[in-house]
Length: 171
Image (cartoon, rainbow, N blue to C red; front, side, top):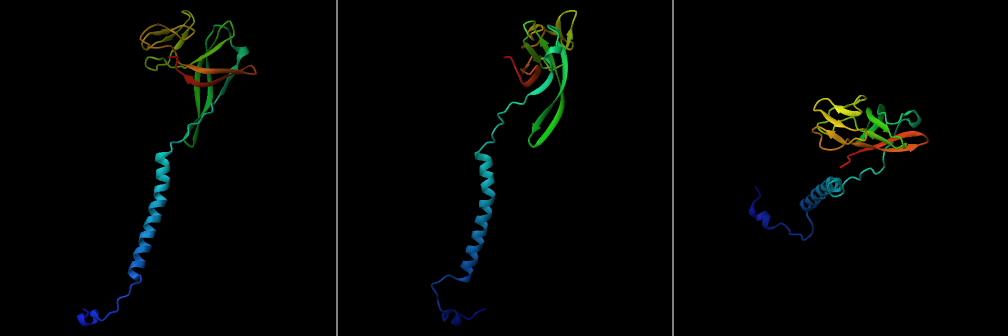
C-alpha cells in the first residue's frame, strides 16, 4: 500500500501515459485483425461468383455413319467441372438422324422417374420398361405416365462431326 501522503504529492501530467499507449496498441491490433477477416467475408457475401458462360461441346461421332430414322445409343466421355475438380465421366445419348439430315440427341433417362429406356425396332419407338412410357423417334410422349417429351442435348455439326452441348428440357 502506498501511503496517502505520497499519492497526494505525485505530479499530475497532462500527456499520454504508458497505459494509454498500450491500450491504443491493443485496440489497433484488434482493428487490423477484424479488418483482415472482414474483407474476404464481405466480398464473399456481397459479390456472388460469376457463372461460366462458355458452352462445353463434346465430339460424339461422324454424322456420315448415322443411318436415317435409326436411333443409335452413343457412348462418349465428357469433362465436368465441379469447383476446382475436373471429372471425366462416361455418358450416353440416343442419336437420331431424320431423312432431311437434321440430328437430334436425347438424354438416356425417361422424363417420368429417370429410368433408362431403350429403342424397340419392331414398334418403332422408345420404350421405358419400368412404367410403360412410350416415346416416338422425335422424343414426344405417345403413351404412359411420362409428363413431358425426352430431354435433348444441344447439337452442332462441325466438319462432319456431331458435337453435343448442354442438356435442355423441351418444356
